[in-house]
Length: 376
Image (cartoon, rainbow, N blue to C red):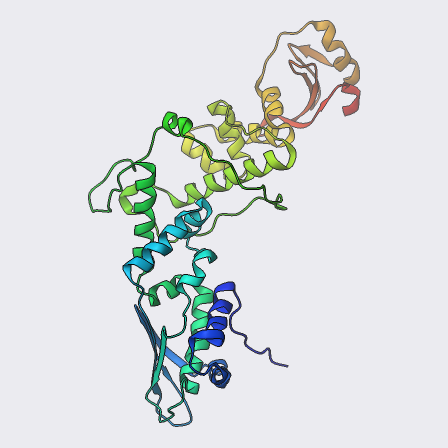
């Protein structure tokens, strides 16, 4: 059996249809008459502009009817209310800048009684006719795909809304918004770290449950200007890295890693992937970085430290490792080696096992352990 096409599959599409059925249309009981036309793809050549959604709808005759949904454009005062509502939460601002429309503004942009006027070139005087009703359902599909289309219908494009959001955010932060231009503009306006640290804090809302995994970055709603100096792939990597670290701190009490040295942080980031790209960008030897990454993946910062540290220790402390490897094991500093196996003692008295690799040298493969016999 063929799957029946449904409309209003997201919150915005469903909210649109609910608004039409409950209050926006003169006779909402006629709305289902257009559902079949919408499912049969009879609504085509759709044009969206502020205050109007226009399309050609094929009925029973050969030529299509011209069908229009006129929507009342919101006033400046109404837009001001919507933007202030959206700016009340940092999560709303982040959602808008990420290409999402916060649900909190739904009641202000969805159609109310008298906001919507369907018109059609067909001879049916009903409001709505089945052609206009079909366009209503297809509009729900549009808002499912892009809720900003509803804001456009209300009078403001995506770019206009985002420009206002950025301007208001900059005003609240006490910085000037630099408009885009063809000339390099230098660094984006910011506030200093010391200012941000001294800024008065506000109490947080009740903590939400910990998600099962770190969040993922959504696509940017608007690409940065060419002169901004922002690589969107690198930005996405930084955002994902921050999300993973924050999640790990909440889930298991992991350290933030913000106090790492530059070298250790390079290895930590390379351990997430793109090792060769990071080696090229930093000028590090790829083989050395791959070996360091292998150590990080086994033991984190402690494993990386064991990988690179060369310590002078009491030979008596190395005797346990030498005995574990057996006759012929050689001791040098904090290492004891036999054949392709090497045991290392770190500054905290823990043992790590390394294995010889033809390309990468000594490669950390296990640890840490309090007893070197655990590796035998």
